[in-house]
Amino acid sequence: MKKLIIIGAGGFGREVLQYALDIKEAGTADWEIAGFLDDNTNSLLGYDCGYEVIGAIEGHTVSSENVYICAIGDPKTKLRIGRRFLSEGAEFINVVHPEAYVARNCKMGVGVVLCPNSTVTTDAALGSFVAVDVNSICSHDVKIGDGCTISHFCDLTGFTVLGEGVFLGSHAAVCPSVKVGDYAKLGAGAVAIRDVEAYATVVGVPAKKISSAQQDQ
Image 1: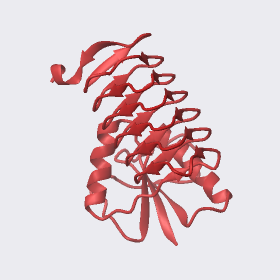
Image 2: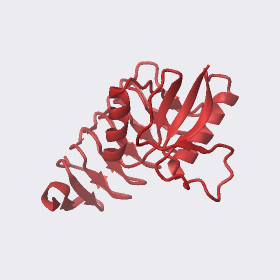
Image 3: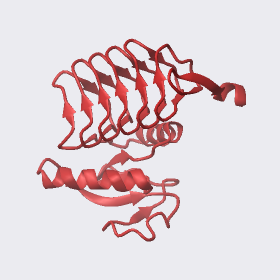
């Protein structure tokens, strides 16, 4: 049986560990949990989670004896590490909590995390390394690019499109058919009623741009 290694031992990593344990308890896992990779070897100090940091991300040698899941919230970091591991032959699994709802005809890439009470409905398509947090919904015909992080209680309504590496803060919402460009960020509670340009950070109701990462560079 292969060993599951969780990349990232921060708060989300510890949550993903619990979801993995729930999957094992449900009897649907074909792997055993090995522990975490994190460049901060002290990440778990003060936490009694039953597993340890077994090595650093940097310099880790990918093995066919392992399967991986990336539990990092920042989209750019998540994609950089995930794609590097993929290029080295890593096998990524999807961690889909038993209490998540997934429609039969939705599509998902690899390295996807669907947290408890998250919902992915009819004809939705999720890229690789997407995380959909607790109580968030991806409605019919939604398209989500690689590396997106969707925080708690977010609402992606029908036909919305997220580009690569989009970050949605808690309680953010995207109205029907609205497109959000690559690496844009929606602040907590933001409501996008019109398209959001790539690299923009938007906040408020309705969402308004406050900065652009490309302009800041």
